[in-house]
Length: 154
Image 1 (cartoon, rainbow, N blue to C red):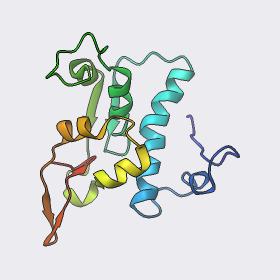
Image 2 (tube, helix red, strand yellow):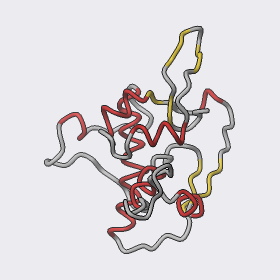
Image 3 (cartoon, rainbow, N blue to C red):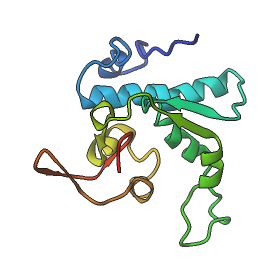
């Protein structure tokens, strides 16, 4: 078992507490936890020398691993045609397996693109995320919301 910890002197005070409580806090806190698990987890495995053939994501908590894989599988600018996506999607898909044991909407975290922009600061360019996850607006609880990304996004 490998544990990830953000309580390090080099991190901002807000980020040092991200791994203190599981499932705690608001949407911002939860998104940061999913960044640590999905992106940080993949980077940690790579740093330890693991060569992963396929990642198994159970539930969506590690779904941001997909962003890390998109970042790793970017096309060279000269290799992509002008209308193509910037990423080698078939390679990313081959590396991922997703299962869920709670297939109900209420069990799936959703995050706004605005929050994505605040936390991930164009880690994978927002326009590309919208192309992959969708740009259209959803209705939730009678309020119009911006299109959401993450597990449960349609």
